[in-house]
Image 1 (cartoon, helix red, strand yellow):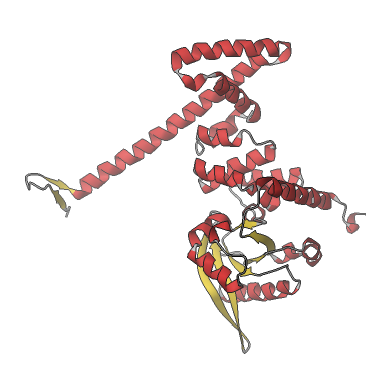
Image 2 (cartoon, rainbow, N blue to C red):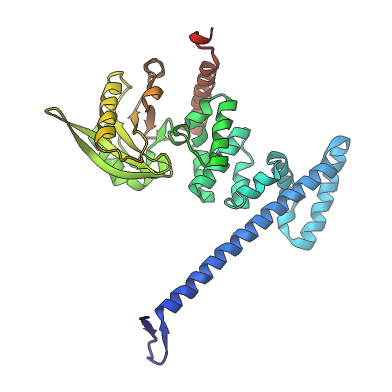
Length: 355
């Protein structure tokens, strides 16, 4: 039986179920209309950019074409407003040049607004643009979130940026075509934990407590799909009790993720400790439909040669640094670009078995 909503003057009653249904219809239609308008505008800008590029800017008439573009923009601004200024038309041309596949644009525009594309367009590398476009769709980033991810150099902090372009593009294609995400798209190095407001001197307990206090911020830094499970997860092995710092579950990867927090440089002994935790979780905590757990060891300083020799990736263990203060962007850029160059060169070296 429907419950009625009575007005203050008691003169009219409205069934709550009817009111709820109509509100839902309005909201659903608003969303559908907004999506349709966004797709239409994005495709309009792409077609304008493509047409201008092909008929005006290409070939020997490029310089003359820029003059025509300026005149064209004046005509369009007069008829349709500032959305068709010279700089806007130039951006549309770059849009069509950068995203030359019409079907891909049509698919992405179902999830991304024109404002998303404007943030992605200035990025230099094609893989960067693909990464941010696909991750924006997957994690449903707002424009503000996308901007923040770009500013924090998320792409450079993922393992995929350190792979040869062919392998990286293969993983992005898997994500786009089959919605299959790999751990290399999930884990970052380093993690930026400046929001914890930790002082110069702090303990592992202080770090753990600060993470739980700012859990929402930590989950956002980890990325979409992580759910908090436990703190100081107790594991009884034989007659000894062990405690895992933090335990999460990742919905897309469908597996538990064990996190250990360490001060100082990575040590080889951390591998054995994490392997013990992962095997215990696999035996006692993993459901039949879940994949085997993964481990994440967060240190203030990595040790890349040790990590490589220990072959941690084969054990399902990832090691990453964390930053409690965000350095200047130029410092980050130099550090990341050097790390990416070194990692790619190492991956492209022939293995002994292949020689």
